[in-house]
Length: 347
Image (cartoon, rainbow, N blue to C red; front, top):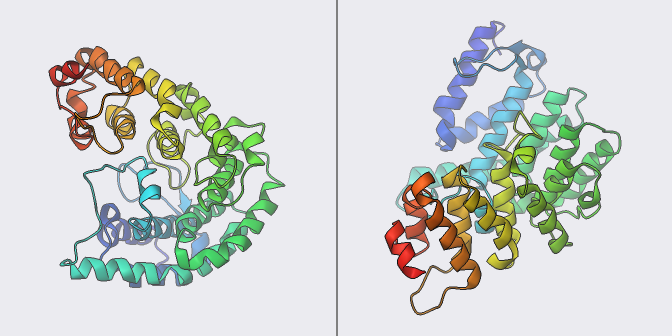
């Protein structure tokens, strides 16, 4: 709350680096988040400041938007591990990375539970800013509300949030704002079938990112269509939407792989992505491979035609791109040989 913008900037840096370092929750995180939620409506929230770190070179932002963004990160960390399917749809998920603390990590478990217990209070503080006239504040509030309303004990608040966002959606024309709302409604599991027919392909894709309750084949078709032209898809949001890091195609791919009832449904597009080469191997080729062998490869079972075609694409591109050697952890997780010779022998 200091009047000196440099002091405020340093305080925000402390939140990022010390209270939620790289998404890790500590025993201090919950009480700090409670304080942040309590000051969201403070007049100082209107003040703007620049980033504290050299790599934070974006335009000045309001303190309120920055604090809302930080609460969203806390909520994302607190939600991890509650829903395996949801975690697997996140573009950074790896089968060998399980960040849920062991039973012996008492402090970590206490920190996680404290942050989860706090989510109703945090959401009640965030919700008023979903109607903010400041687009940056509104977007940051939405970015915080999305993971907060994923909490099982906040399901009763989702209908009200949906009504608020639907009302805003009716008055919006900008791609970014409309797509962000479509993504929120989709991730909350609400019916977004109407948005799957939107005239804007970015809105259609965002409406298909969640655990679709209706129109599954149609939603999957929307996602696969976007993956056929990943360069265009990545260009929709030069500045990533709140809660979406990395290239947007990573998020679209993970959602498509999770939504597909079988690998065969996504095989033509997935195999084409591997065969094209020059892709982000760990964020595309690896997840595709793991989806093709969901139970792990077993010598007792013959390869399907789709699995065989996928492995052939890996072998054909390995020398030029390292598609196998750079993804050996994914191959190991899928129960497959970890080198080109081993994969070629299966074919």
